[in-house]
Length: 298
Image 1 (cartoon, one colour):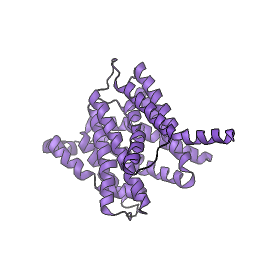
Image 2: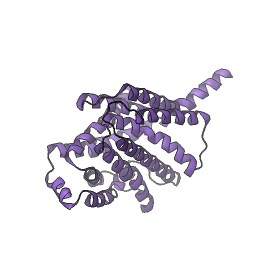
Image 3: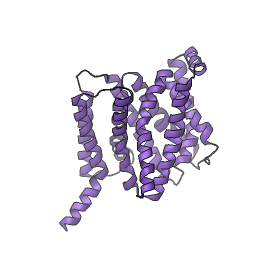
Image 4: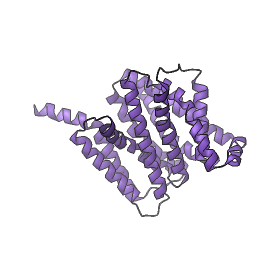
């Protein structure tokens, strides 16, 4: 990877890691459902002027949007409102890698390799250590559980992406942009029944610099610019080179949360974080490590 692209990769990692801090700031001003609905409304309204409509059939777009966009962020924003620290959320959300592998086995009948089974076991063990921590921590069981639900929704969206791609339809930034018109509908319906019309209206007329800046960052910078640069890197380099970069996201998220939100992580949680990262690294690099071992053996 050339120096310029390494710099772009660093921008993406920082943008996506800091994304969780901005989510926390946005949730200080808006309810979870309103933040989610307005975020994707902004993406759709701005993005449709710059990106062509995908050739993906409507039903696949809806399935993709309800899982990856609505499900993931409805659970994640709710989790952060119910006691999930932003820094830990950036790490626990990476459970999507585990769920993606499990869903691929169950739904797509993909084969799993022994090192992947080991990776899943290690990562699950790390998540268990984090979730069962009884020390003085701001994380709640409900927040932790909802973040896992967000990870599973992200994983289901990954399965939709795989199926859409296999069928020869667009599964790129165009799909991300145009499918963003779908999530505002369930988000605002949920907001109406959960928050009430008065709260919804107060959120809208009470938009201030902090909430608008949060929405702009989440929609324009983290999503449109972030995924645009990510697609650029994927078009220039093998996925095996680009995909591991996401391991840096929780590192940035945890560090940023400590600096900007004064969040603290217990020693037991740090142990769990380390175990999860080991599992994720094994899942990402295990195939290449085995290939090198076999080459040396022969």
